[in-house]
Length: 121
Image 1 (cartoon, rainbow, N blue to C red):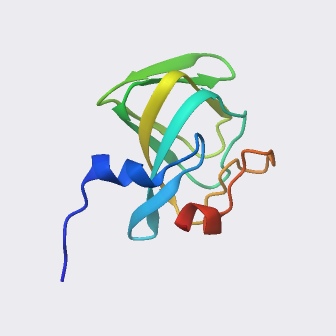
Image 2 (tube, rainbow, N blue to C red):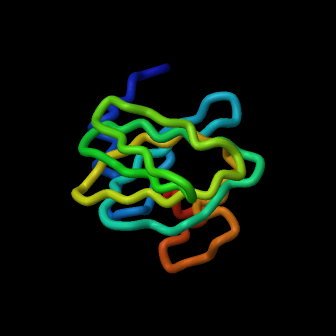
Image 3 (cartoon, helix red, strand yellow):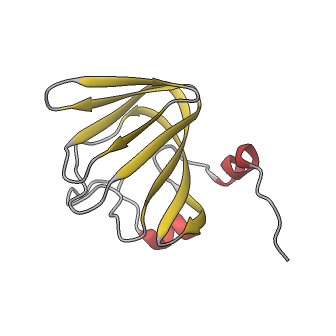
């Protein structure tokens, strides 16, 4: 039987900043929730677009030649291959939509990199 998911309640699964959790999927796209605070890491996703939807707070996404500021209710799609670095001055809740094969930090491996298995747990 199908039942709805409360988006705000899905964030209860997120216990660490920059550690997304998969909450659903649609046609090979994963829906992930994450809590962000501070600066992440410069990276790109070759072959995959990534959508950021701001559920709570605000987020700046730095690009190599400019930055975009997002507020609650805003969304932005980062095109495939575009280097970016999300920065949240205060805690920010974000819904991410991206293909299942998207690597968390692209080809950059850091202590913040999470495997798909970690994101599914």
